[in-house]
Image 1 (cartoon, rainbow, N blue to C red):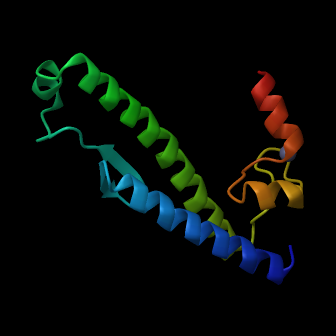
Image 2: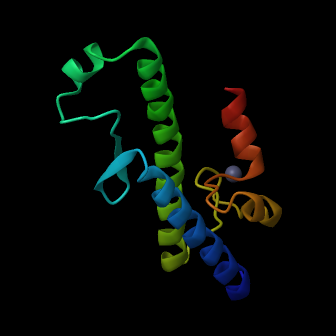
Length: 125
Ligand SMILES: [Zn+2]
């Protein structure tokens, strides 16, 4: 990977990370570096009783936020992983086949962990 390309990817990843963290902080709280917990509507930590008092549409919204939080958290984890790989000089290598991930794929999904071939393979499973 050329330094120039890595710089560009790093910038994209850091911007994306900031965006996701900002978005997450609107309905979740950060437990540790990339662990988030949804707080809705007013969680005091004993979520069981809070859920029982919620209206059906509130519960639905809560569940939507939970899955959204899950998606964003996974993305955030992958971004942090990609940033770490840039530091270590292993960025852009497919975790499965150890070949270089296609550049056009990295431009589209800079936090990608697998090359196109492996990704398709996992998807079809
Ligand atoms: Zn691969």
